[in-house]
Image (cartoon, rainbow, N blue to C red; front, side, top):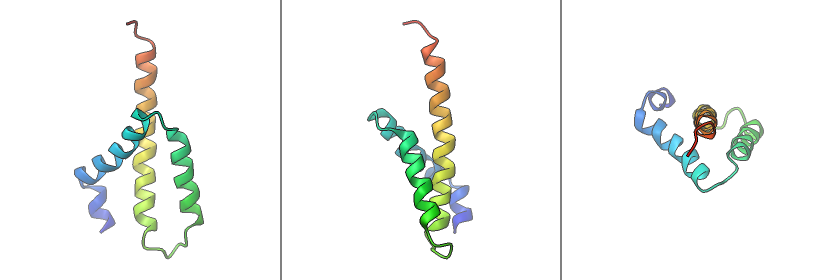
Length: 79
């Protein structure tokens, strides 16, 4: 049912929120993404969890890029 998750707005938003929460807590989101990549690389290709983790990685990478763009825009604004 991975294909269903890919098109499910709520599931995607939940994964995005995981990374946003980490960012707001001042966690190193790049380290989180890299750790997830490493976990995926170490997984067995027949592991049923592999598809879900690849989807999480896809969402996290997209979200991380969005976070960094927003940071760059906000850095240029005067307060």
